[in-house]
Image 1 (cartoon, protein in one colour):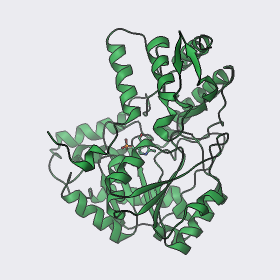
Image 2: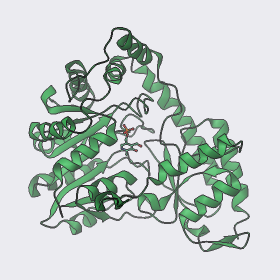
Image 3: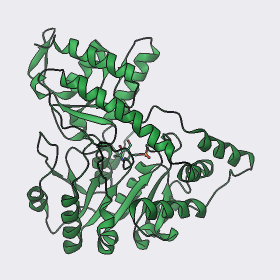
Length: 396
Ligand SMILES: Cc1ncc(COP(=O)(O)O)c(C=O)c1O
């Protein structure tokens, strides 16, 4: 069978592949400790599940408007106002089947063939594939390998008259970096001046530590808001990854165009999940604080244990639930006469021989790094990091 050129271009998701392999190994009885997960390990809060059950019992099981039910869009507007200082009308909001779907719709809606899309490295793996699928050209902005931050000069150097979009992920997956306000402000000003659109992926905005502040780039001024498509969702904040609800807020013309695309692809996101997402946005927000507190304990533990491992470095993450560490000093070395040249090979050896799953940095555009998720128990972190430290002694 001949697969279309468009789809042939797409690489499988390295994060999903490693997680799936770790799960299969676990099923086969191997005691794999997985640090590859991109999702909170907590159960979805009961009040959210109850709302979904009620939706089913009340027969709320039919098509809804493509862009989502009005109550949910109103609740999203309320959230954006209260938490981000952004004023939107429900017509400027569309609910999709997860933030990944929101991003897909936004990129396909905004990006024409050969449009250049600025992508700070390390990037979340899916952006590149979605840009390519839309016919656009990802233009990578390399970061400082120690701080994992991009410089202002590097952004300026990449601007051409084909630059259409820049994607900001704040806090960042995989680095856990929270963007500095000053850089965001400069990007917003530049976007206004050069008429560059901004996609601001804020899916991890609630998972922040050490008093960091993940401000939405749209909130600097009404002009910045007009240039920005804000993407968010309930997956990470409310431990609802399986429910598949994400949303986009932006200028009405873009939202309407995304709606047309969604009309002819998925139609509405699941009616029951929409009611669950509504309950999530209206529930006692202490739920989030409790989860953040636990993530923070795990973060501190993982930082402490990774610091005990020789020859690796990483900037202390202040957001999301990942640590992105530089393991390049282990490349060019060998395990059991097998040379390790790439982060993928290192991740494979760790999975097969040390029963530890981490995602290779190459998936995020940075060779030599590994991403560890601390969305797992302290017991697993303690065990896994000790196992990792001991195993690495065999790489010579
Ligand atoms: C940076 C980033 N954006 C978007 C998403 C997609 O979230 P969702 O599960 O709502 O599709 C993820 C999921 O891993 C992510 O890491």
